[in-house]
Length: 384
Image (cartoon, rainbow, N blue to C red; front, side, top):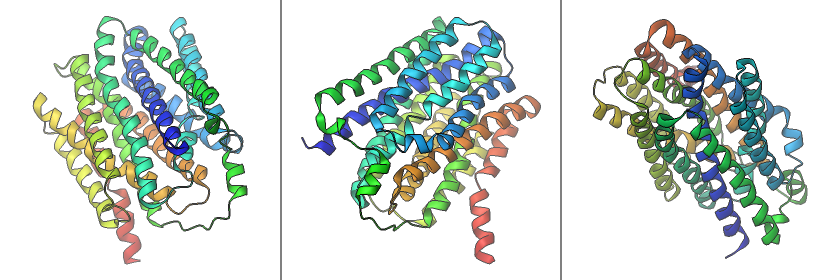
């Protein structure tokens, strides 16, 4: 097995387990904060915005540092830091301290995904880049898909159980990277992004479609944040859907995303397709509008399944078109992460506020309008 394939397997395995742990912790926090601290939907949305906000902030602030770090050091720091933050969170009864800990949770997370994505995409273009990003996407999305089902089951026993499991998994990723580094010299020798650029003689061939793709991932992540953060509360408050059933719905969404990532990784017809990028936004808008009419669990299953498919397109557009032709992959992956995180913050804060003020249907209708904003601005620019 060559070095590139071995690195890919290690990083994809790490991405799967890390995302499984993070998704488990993030969903469990919704129930943990509601049942242990009796927080409102708005404050729970704010708590999610704290760690996504600090993730967003430190992805930018720490970029000069991570740009000079070896990728393995960055990932190891992230895993250990997040694990210890969650240990501290489980030991406190002070909600202010919880919010402070969530701040550091986001800080340590900022050392993870931009570095992993840069590491995987380094030196690849075209179909090779598409396969590498698809493998990464399939890995983390499978973790995100499987995690909610186990989380919902564990939460039914105790809200702290899934957080404990998440902590164990974060430490396991640290040991995976550390052991792989010791056993495989080629992984240990991987240079920082700054060193890699300095050694190369590269010409920038970026595509302008990255801007539309980035706008799409921003608005769709805002809509996704509502689905992940607000829907569990809506199901708990208004529907006869228990925690395990919510986990099943999120599993369906995640598995649809996972399968679609595999399909997109094996095909190229979607590369540089502007019409398709805009069409996905329109379909996502129609899906959320239809979501206000759903009255059965079966239809919710279909809703979450379609949502997962459309999300896979939007995410793939952003990461592929952002990296394609670029010299400085770390900055492009940073932009990708900053935008999806911005969308998560917007969705978490505004979703919680509007859910309390106007109800779930109003939140979905608002989301169906928001996801059309890139299309709206594209039409204005074209006419101008």
